Length: 431
Image 1 (cartoon, rainbow, N blue to C red):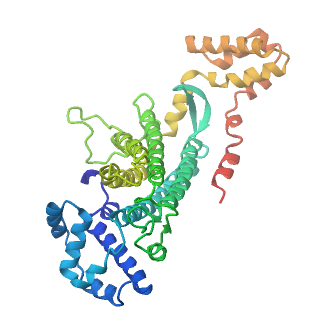
Image 2: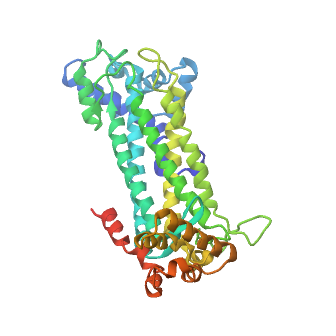
């Protein structure tokens, strides 16, 4: 992932040095188990650990010749650690190291992403509670529907990201497996107790049945979860972008004093962060299909998944980490304009009260079809003539014969639409 969209904490997980450090941890953990099982001489781990050094440049230099990264790594370690290093990798295959390391990196990344989600949830919750009763118009198909509150609008996102957190927790658990089972997963050349020891040491679970690789359905689920989270980010970003349009302007991204919006038009204040998040979401989702296609490998293993994972592992997790943090800051610093929300709601002269009038007419003896026709006629008249929906309804003889003025006025009460907001908040924010 390019620097522009990378944060150090997540990026460091995918750094070459961290990868090789994890490889060494895996090899040493396996050797420790073998020492305990008296498969290799006692003291090997202590000697190798004291002498071994991770030299990324040297490993890459060796790999240019041998064309095999794990062999290059082991050769480099042997150069420093000496003859005791010959006991490393005993009975193991490259995928034992590669797959266990990849899962460790995904687990490490996942933990950071969980923290990111917690920060985002906190930002959303704070704004949602603050604007619990801030009236705004609800829209369906982009058209004014009925009143809602901005806090409730935010609460939908809060719940969605809570679900995303649960999805990610489950996916991290699924991906947290270790395989030290040898060439085709039969343990022919390595004791299964070594795998059990390594898994415990690295805080992973054993892979119940591996071939030469850990099954890729686990990885497909993990990257699919990242894709779902990205889609949630895009949905939120899209809402902000729509609400920031000049003719709407119910919310607006924070705009710094020295910030510039356009190279040509000095007046511009664009929702660039939300647009950027939309783009990053597309990028993150692009990892899902390759991850799904990685599930189908030839027989016990091929390496068609390898190049894919070397790219999507760092790119998807780093991009999502960046996106979650950016969205959290956007929500935290969002400019919210309640007066514009009321102004926009009043654009349609109260026609959003149409359902209340419809329901009241049906309770007064009209069939639903009759009531709908009467109310729709008055609503369209208000829309076309820019006239008051209340006045049109009050002057309709079919209506005023059935509904007295004092009762009709009560049908145009905004509190009717907010009377159960507390219930929704209570059940959504309960521990």
